[in-house]
Image 1 (tube, rainbow, N blue to C red):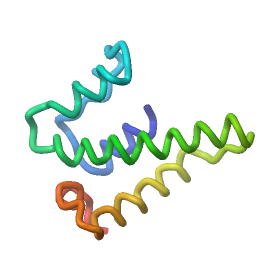
Image 2 (image 1 turned 90 degrees about the vertical axis):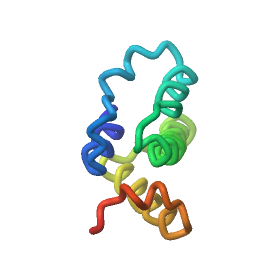
Image 3 (image 1 turned 180 degrees about the vertical axis):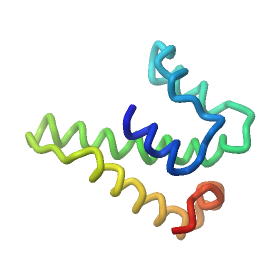
Image 4 (image 1 turned 30 degrees about the horizontal axis):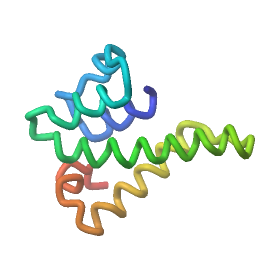
Amino acid sequence: MRVWRMFKDWLGLHNVHSSDWSDATSVKEWWSHNATKKTQSRKPLASLMLLISWELWNERNARIFRNTAVPVGVIVARIKEKASLWSMAGARHLSNIMPQE
């Protein structure tokens, strides 16, 4: 949840309420709820959901199978870097909400 909140704040997604996510009974329900919302941030949020979920899954696997772990800040930095690369590669909805740093 810390990773998700950090991205929500970084991108200024004020209409995304991560506190609502704890009500979901499954990842599928959570995914469907967020991916089908009729908001301006729906498409970029779907891209972020894919990217962040993938990176968290990779971190989970590293912790379980390789007994290695990195701090949350490192995970967030990796995701930000990949989000930037996705934007440069043409993920226009994601690039529309990315802060210009």
